[in-house]
Length: 93
Image (cartoon, rainbow, N blue to C red; front, side, top):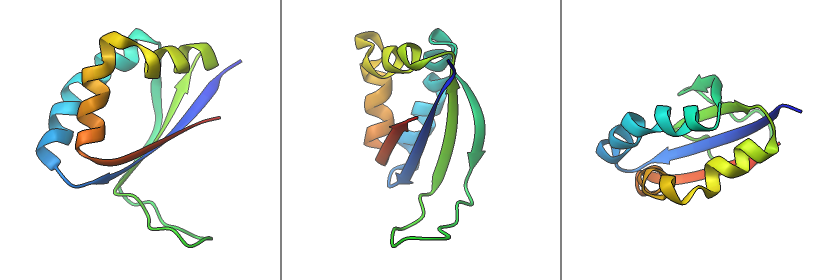
């Protein structure tokens, strides 16, 4: 069954984010993930949290692919770039 991940990024280092973006496509392709939506205009309509700078909804073939992507040791340096760019949160649905 298809799985989705919501990724939120609050950017502190745009240069590191640019380096991440160069590698992110290949990392996602390895696990057959595709961005379903990407926004730099997220708006909080309920709750008391700050809107992220970037919000992405990823679609994976299934949960195993999503977990493979986030836990793949070969992708650790790619994930480290995302994490080093600021604060990132990923919710698997």
